[in-house]
Length: 299
Image 1 (cartoon, one colour):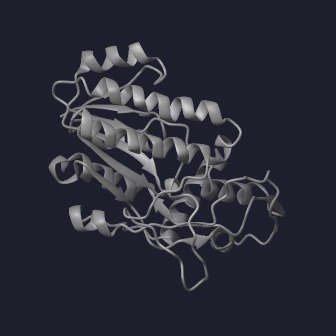
Image 2: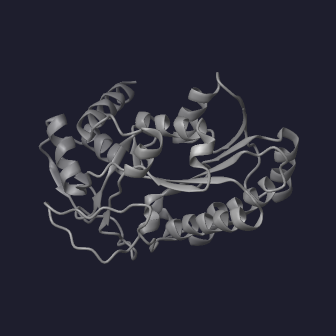
């Protein structure tokens, strides 16, 4: 297929490009999503059969401080891409990378033995500028599907990890802090529960969605896995794997007004549709990520 991808240089995009390059005619969008006429011209010139939309600002914490920029890139830029895509003569699907963050604030109770789980029927209630923009994109795609006959698939991604060159996100941040600082590290909240998906599993599910267009059109999918752990538990797991015995200074980052206590999802629907399920458990995924950063920090 002729596939246009946005965000090809990002964490997920770079892995996906490596997977798709040999199978498909792949084109990476060069224009900024906010350059409306340029985006339109690129789409017309390439005339893709499939669009994979990954490009976005994804640092949820930072969206509380750069609300307008996040909305401009993540929402307005996506609306422009959707409108341009709706004019394409040969488009078979528009696959959008959404997020589990759209679930936001939910009236649920948490205990170590009872972790609520969200699925595709759970009503989203986004509670961060990043999440609001992503949910807005989902609703715009639904509108475009009804009114413009735009084929689409929405993937509500879980927290992914396994990065090799970015330590902003929690798993990589904890690992690199502990490797660099044997005595003391600074972290934010320890109470929230999150589930995590290793990058190889994430790329596998994207590959399946891309190659099963007729099974996924018009659908929203969560990815799971249904195994959320508290940030405190995650940090303890990493510390034990590194034999790290230093002091953790919690709550050292600015308060986030929209902090969510739990994000946990199930992969039941997509497993039923495509047979995919996460194969890399959290312990193994952490081992692989730790190995990567140990090697990188030796360079």
